[in-house]
Length: 294
Image 1: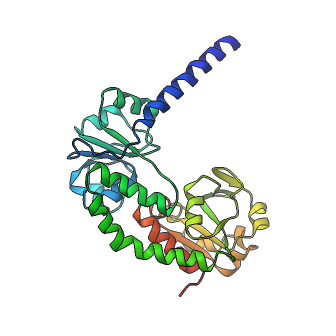
Image 2 (image 1 turned 90 degrees about the vertical axis):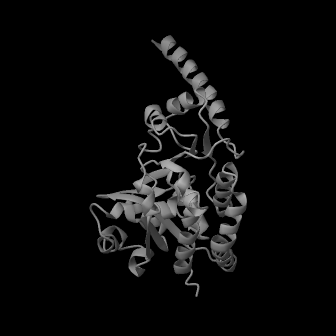
Image 3 (image 1 turned 120 degrees about the vertical axis):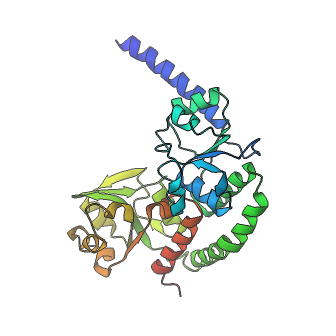
């Protein structure tokens, strides 16, 4: 049994390495041969296509594509990490644009094997990363000049303001925590490498749980010990069981600075965590609150 397990593990590792090599081929910003029928796998990608006025090319989207509202009128291909070959091909795409975590891997492999033009847009959780993502998509569609004009008009003023806030407060960083979800006393927070951690950094602040890796469950005692100045939370977690008022009055937070002073920030999940154009504005709005910048 142990020998069989070792052999299976070797073959599994070889498959993962081979697939990674194939997926690396997807990360290309070269102009597509045909971008007239785009299938989107990822909310930030859909948002960017609308941002650069390329939305008429979209023929289908995944369920995380929720902004702007009209994007939800397109046929759905399911969840970005649980796609199906049949569902995608039924849309007769000339190009598939997806976030770099689209999957599952076997579906991506099949699409590569049948030589569908599929691109995984690389993501870095920073302002520069957002701009690079926009420019990459625009380059694929041969719309780089249109993207540059939009960036200069709508994003650069916010970016400059955000950078000024960072500079002014670089020696007095506020300490934040980002809560993904709360169920009873189980609190899931953003650790290093998460979009929540990236968002905190965009505001020019310090993540109190930055020493953890990934999204992690933490205890009430750990939160009290770290005593954050502000708590950031996605509105997505409020729609079923909680209201903003209930969260603010939760006894879990009564013994920490953020709770005592009512320092809670709530925003749309994709606006904060999607790392599309809206994330810059969201981070700026949060930074203005955190640092009381007039």
